[in-house]
Length: 488
Image (tube, rainbow, N blue to C red; front, side, top):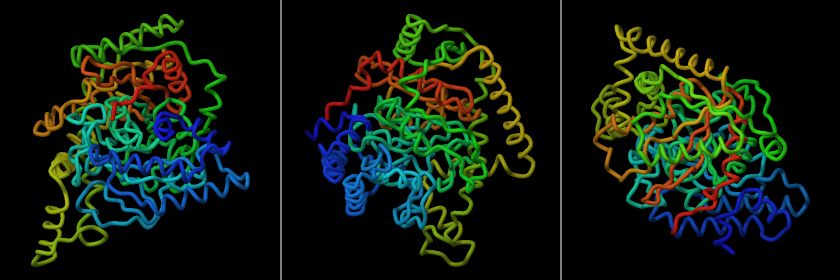
């Protein structure tokens, strides 16, 4: 019974809860036991509050007993990346500088999950302040890929992806700045969606790069991700970047709407930059769509080559500004070995931040410094506009765009730790959509000869999440990848 639950979708779990085959308390207990059994090997969780979580499950059972279930998510456990504020829970961002910080309020997405009756299960590991592509730069632990413990799960939402992949939680919330939901979803063989910038409130999300950060759902299937997106999307007056767009019925449309038929393949994405097995799996997916009546068109996104340098200029600049408030004075770690106020500032940040955070803060401070602001940051923003224009021109010809999600399968732990440029290139296929603010989803489309998952990325027009969900569901329905789990 317990083993079967790890493979079930939210809809299936919800039906079991509705028909009283199982209670939320029993269901959550199964996932808690799974976490205790496996997480010593995987390292997906930074912390959890078992008593509080079981209390939420009992409240859900009481609601269902009275016929007052709030949604399909009522009583279903959801994991939370440790950059999203939850009242009374740790908010470490996987950094020593915040290791003792407890959030005093709920992020909007947490409030919405509470309104749906979802049970929050645990705080999930990440690269420090979401800076990374492997979840190796966490100050507390390295998360391992459930398909191969010697490999990374991707990053920065590696904990959120690994926990879903291993069946420690059915779904989770991550955050995506340059690909941090899609890339770990690809490396763990599950589904991850980055919404259009502004569709999901960022209120309560610890900022890395404010102009690209987005909270996104991670799950085993396209339908699970659509359902979780449904519960967190929508305008929020507390977020000045929130956009008052209509939120369609993503789940209801799955059985009634036809996916759009014209797919674009950017020639710049199908070069020698990706592993042979990755390109073969993506080409096989393209063949599948051709055989099923989709029109495939080659397109060009000529500014693609600038995406990585532009992203790392903008992201580091915004990160250095956002992290400036973590200085040891207010709610962060304060060094005990100081002689004066200035010394306290320096030592607190020196002791609190890890190597990757310091590297990006230094780069960002240089980018924003007097004499360099126009040469780097302003110029990067202009090129960013051209990258977005490339996409908008392409969407005059096609409905969605296909590409690999990651240039490789999961790589060995430590392989790229001393080579930050190589690590940054792991996001080469995902940063462009982030800079353009577009929705994009990663779904599993194959496995390598080493039995490691390969991801397919589908990018859509702004606020056309429905298009990418429908195209992704078409592929998922005809393949068995969503049913594959690692042998743990």
